[in-house]
Length: 194
Length: 194
DNA sequence: AAATACCCTTGATCTGGTTTAAGATGAATG
DNA sequence: CATTCATCTTAAACCAGATCAAGGGTATTT
Image (cartoon, rainbow over all chains, first blue to last red; front, side, top):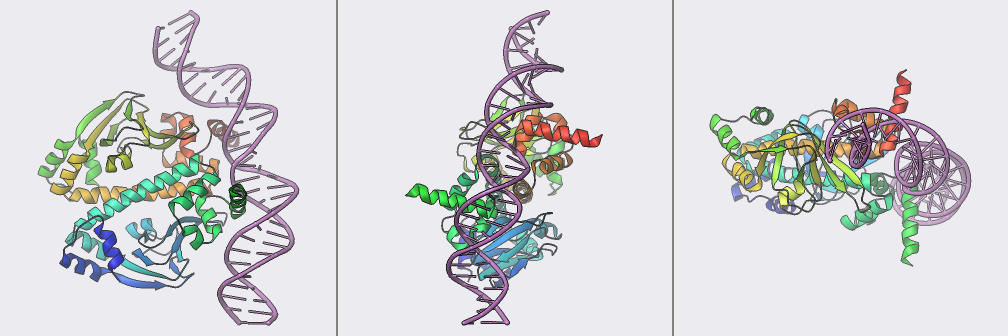
């Protein structure tokens, strides 16, 4: 059950057996059925969640009532509303399961304790946060500088298989355009391949 | 000279006098004249740079030759090409000074040493990276879900005074539209205020 | 004190992507 | 097994914002 999270953490820091035991003792296992919420906007996000299996999406509902996918999370990703988790304030985003999913969760108090007892975890979360920041900044630039078609092609290249796993209209939402327009892009792609 | 960076770091971690001395001993002071480059695309970004005074911009040149402002950095911000700095690979972005600026810089080797000798700095950079990630993600959502006018109004509210400090066409670039369109937004704003 | 380089504005025209609306297909549910 | 619900497609009208082109103001340079 802990194999994937330990392999993931092990990419960035080395842990002693006792540290591994301590770390895993802080984790709680959570099963989510398809369509079930992990966090709803307005709630406080109590846990940082690691995806062992399955697929989730985080989305935001704007003033006009339209939904926008903030991120997808598949195996070996962390998910939740980070701002809400860090500040224990109410979440702006919703996260729900697109498939039946298995998560490992840690709460704020346990994480603080973990930072204190095993400071290497500060390093681990520093590294993954820096990477997440770099990716988010790239996504800003892509959204600003590329056409819808370019973003779509980069998406299927960068997240291979994900387009087979989640509905197209959610990919369109993630990329910042309408499902109708994605349909047109795909049609044009298909005719070009002939 | 070190007042602002120590106050900034002090917001997140507490340092002993000896740790302060050690930290500041690793910093190097850098003066940039207006228009001078801090990092050019293709170079390796050797330093993480803290802005003591002045204003810089990081920008990206796309395939079509258009520039896009990735971020502005004013007093108490860190700047540079983070991906290039972390991996010591060549930078995708350019950073240059919009005003004469004073920086404090740390190189990769010194930072590694700092993490080893004063692990609290892992914590410090974890926290600011997490915040940076949250902001970057908000910017993605804003770009996807709001109109040009809404983004502009949020920008001047969120970064008060910055619109007086940097040319308008760079703000337009940062927000993801053309300078001509910003001009029209401002005209409409002015007429509404009458 | 010209000359040059920036910077901002305005108008006309064009386009990438939205909106609205309708229909087709398949999957989940009572 | 009928019915709702979710997903995807297509097409026509429409719009936010881009592009192109021109002109004017103001620093900075020479």
